[in-house]
Structure formats: structure tokens, C-alpha cells
Amino acid sequence: MLGLLGLALVVSLVVATGLGAVHVPPGQVLRVLAGAVAGWPDGGAGAGSAADRILLQIRLPRVVLAGMVGASLAAAGSAFQTLFRNPMADPYVLGVSSGGALGAAVAHLALALAAGGGSGRGPVGSWPAGGGGLSSLAAAASRAAGFGLVPACAFAGAVAAVLVVSRLARVGGRLAVGTLLLAGVAVASLLGALVSLLVFLSGERLRPLVFWLLGSLSGAGWQDVLVLAVAMAAGLGVLAAQVRALNALWLGEEPAHHLGVDVEAVKRRLVAAGALLAATAVSVSGVIGFVGLIVPHGVRMLVGADHRRLLPGAVLAGATVLILCDTVARVVVAPAELPVGVVTALAGAPWFLWLLRRHAAGRDH
Image (tube, one colour):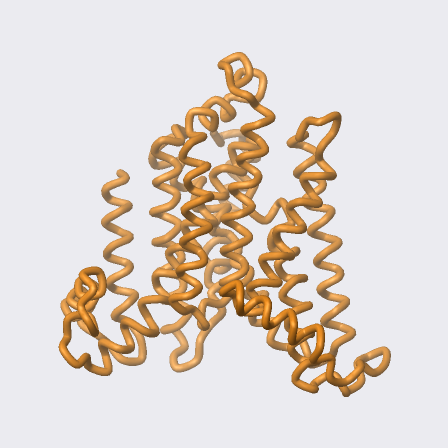
């Protein structure tokens, strides 16, 4: 089954890279991909055609980034569903998306003020014009770190939210899973309200944030791929090292303890690795829902609950699903483009409702 999932990922990558306003045959896509892997200039095409440049500089980084975001969200979802022993859990239960949204809102507002767009009046009064000092320093710091300002602030907001939730859930030196879930819901609600308040007070200045909140990979570049690759290596490395502990935790904390698992240490590692994967994905793609919820559960139905197969299966399936959803988002209403979060919601909501009915009927794992 893992072989079939890997084949599906390769096929989806080739097909998605070739589709667009300029159609490129699969044979040419494979030649360019092989050239890129081998390090040939222009994908091994000599001087390189316009189609080759489109593939290498525009579509390929976007398709690769979509796959990496989907893989990160699905892997984090697998860990959180085991940690909470709840198939309805996903990466955003820890406030990741809301923290990222608040960070992105602050960044967008700073950029608007720095550009001189702050002199107009909001619903309750005027905003100061200019503001270039602090925002310019923040922009310079984010560029030095290899991020744009918005992804950097989104990542910082997501990580800060997870740290606050983890601190609130620590009772007597232990990380209480039930309290962690409730604290995540409460913090996410609070941060979501702050984002809504900022949007209301700033009038038109946060209009770009609306598209970000719906999820988008339209600005993807190789720099984003590099940043996410580093985070994926760290996060997936931690999860891969915990597969035996994950299998034990799936039975419950008490059985896991009797099997020799240091439950508290494992919970801390799972929260840190899952939050790193989800926060980094949110910082480069905006808020994309349902992938971290639906994919792990679907893969569990195919390969079982053994995390030696479930984790790699979720990575492969998550990458394939988001590549296909992003392809639909950019070709179905071309030359315009749908937010990919809208596509994942349209595809994932019916599956979620079916899952909810199955769970309510007591036929879940």
C-alpha cells in the first residue's frame, strides 16, 4: 500500500507540474525534472525554452511546496490524533492557525502603515500615518532570517500560541492531554477574536489578509521550499524516532507507561514536533484546513494503526492530496485562481461529516 501511495505522489507531481495556462506534456516535465535533479542547467534543455523556465521557476517550487505543506500537516495530524486518542483532532487544535493568523495580521498592518496607507480613518477613528521605523526594522530582520515579514510573523504567532497552550495545560509538572485540548480551543477562540477585531478596526488595510486566511500557495518560491524542508527534517525526524511510543500511546497512557514508555517526555516531544510542522506550514501557505484531519484517518483505514506504516503513509497521502487540491485551485477558474483552502474545505467537509456519523455510531477505531 505504501508503494501505491508513493506512485500516486509521483504521478500527481508530474501531472500537476504540466497543467496550467501553458500545457507541458508529461515527457517534457519528466525531462526537466530529471535535469533539475541531475543539476543540468535549464533542466538539461540547453538554452532552455520558455516552458522549461515556467516549470523550473514557477510551477515546480509551487508543486513541491504544496506537497511539503500537505505532508507536514498530515504528519502533525497523525501525531495529535494519537496523542489525544481522538480521530477528530488536527494540527490546529493547539491554536496554530489562530496564532499564525494574528501574526500575519500584525505583519500586514505594519506593511500598510510603512507604505503610508495608515492615514485613513477606520470605523472608530484614524490610524497614524507612516510607521516605517519599527516595521522597517522588523522587515529587515525577517529578510536577514530568510523569511518574508508575513511568514515570519505568522510563524512567530503560531509558535507563541502553542507555547501558551502548553503552559496552560501543564498541571503539577504533567502535560494534561484533556486540558491541552480545551486550552487550545480557548486560546484559538481568543486569537480569532483579536484577528476579527484588527480587521474591523483597520478597514481596507487588511484586505490581503482575507486571501491568506483562505490559504494560498500562489507566492511559492524555492526559498519557501528550503525553509520548510529544514523544519520537516527536524519534525519528521522526531516523530520517526517515536513510532514505538506512538503505538503504545494509541493503547492509552496507562498501558504505555506499563510498556516502559516515558509518557510525559513523549507527549512533550510530540507537541513540539507537531507544532513545528504545522506552524511552519501555516507560515508559508496560510490557513489550510482538513488535510491534517482527514488524511491521517483515511490512511489509518488503509494501512492500520501501526505508526511504522501510518506515519509514512500520511506523509505520502498528505502530499498527494494537497498537490491535487492546489492544481484544482489554479486551473478550474483559470486565469483566475481559487484559494486552496476553499478546495480542501469543499473536498474535506463531506468526508468529515461522514467520519462524524461513523464516530457517533461507535464504528471508529
